[in-house]
Length: 36
Image 1 (cartoon, rainbow, N blue to C red):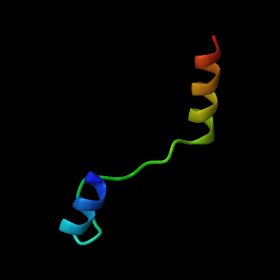
Image 2 (tube, one colour):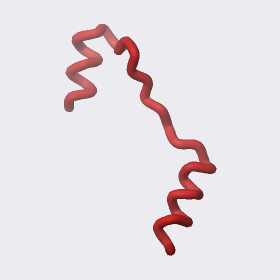
Image 3 (tube, rainbow, N blue to C red):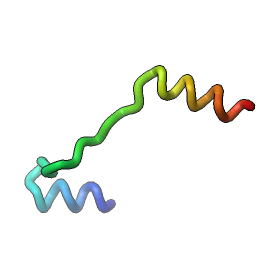
């Protein structure tokens, strides 16, 4: 994958890139939004 290739190139740390997991609130709002 692209992410794995980047991790290999940057030795595990990619500058200025953070993999952000959505919060429970964001997931909940997304679920509500899709049900309408």
